[in-house]
Image 1 (cartoon, rainbow, N blue to C red):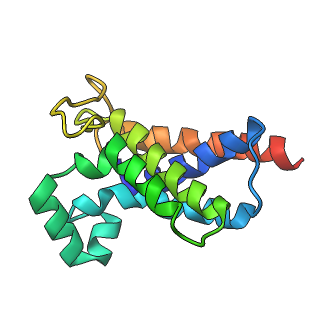
Image 2: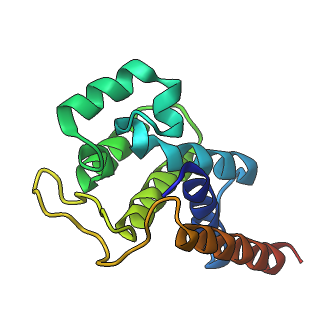
Image 3: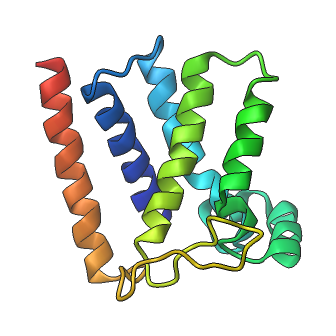
Length: 158
């Protein structure tokens, strides 16, 4: 999936969480953190939005792990959770980044390529015949996510 789809997917995941009765102290920080977190797993890809911003780090991670492996795994989510517990950040920021990263992984599981969610196992988890990155199907999916965000926003605030 493209960066914009990951951001919109993370915002939709956050809106769903709040619609289902979840709470956060600072919604603006939560939504901003969702967007940031949604891009972090692609630090292993040289052409990604975040990879272009931190060129040396993406080269190192890509060379060591490859794309859609360690940074798209349950291990990465767990280590991130442990790291966040060591920061002075508000819980809404920590949870927003974490949920954004998780939503990124779920969305990449919907692609033909899939991810190695159970890394270091070589098992690739994806949808056969899934969405091709940058395709018309992704654009339709992106649009559907926008509609879902609008619907959930109306339910939450009106």
